[in-house]
Image 1 (cartoon, rainbow, N blue to C red):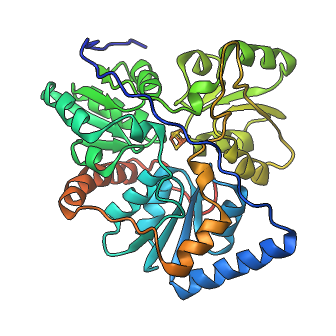
Image 2 (cartoon, rainbow, N blue to C red):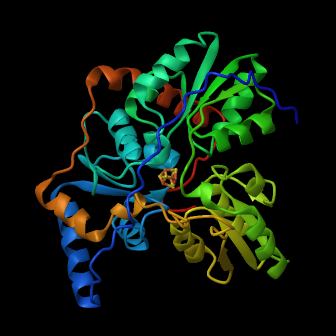
Length: 360
Ligand code: SF4
């Protein structure tokens, strides 16, 4: 594949994102946990609410979402699922941009989140004002942003994409001769650029979780498990992607575990995904891709600290008092819904990522 880019020299220098410590939740005895889960189930019914959880959240939340008729999914499916619900309230266990996307698609519904401070290094590293100034310099480019962005950034864009659909959309745009300004994940952008040959400018953001996978250590682990397939999320650095047997969205990686014949898998993405993988393929052996290479500080260790802010405890609290509601300025919502809807329409038209709820 060809690689082309305008290689601008005026890319913004991003401020360092402040990474919170991993939250430590009080340990529950099994009776206490059962009681808490019953309370949440009752509240979900009383509030006519449905729980939508991301694959990276704690397994208790994923299990609860499935048990109560909600959904466990990647961000594309989370958005689509929420929009198809009759429930008056959507409770989004994930990070802030996921709650915002739900609200953008469902302005008439109440959208609650266990912790409104659960953000994402990609979202944090793409401030709306700076982004608007940057894209203004490239009026001849189509602006494609990853879902991991604020409502304001989406409102300034032409397309929103998730990792499950990015390749298809960019390929389609490139075939029409469009030049692309991509934000915010440089690794995913580079992967898409290489795979499609599109002319792309890449915003220099990154995911703090995927950025910590280490290539030399991964080579070592592969030598120890020569029969294992390496599964990599494309937010990972290029030298990790190069070693992959499968590169894909969370849904694609889960599918790989269930369909490939390998017994062992080395998985380079947030370890929250292991719950769904193991549930669907209990006989497979899952190995965490190494995050600690020489000189690494390992701040995330394959576990997103913001995803970790979701727990049974704060879920019960926000359902109790219906707090932590997502609000979006109607003028921003009106603009942001256009590129999101464009993606959903493209997915429908091309039958991409359509799946039954709760499955991978
Ligand atoms: S895992 Fe990375 S991309 Fe996902 S929410 Fe956390 S920081 Fe953002």
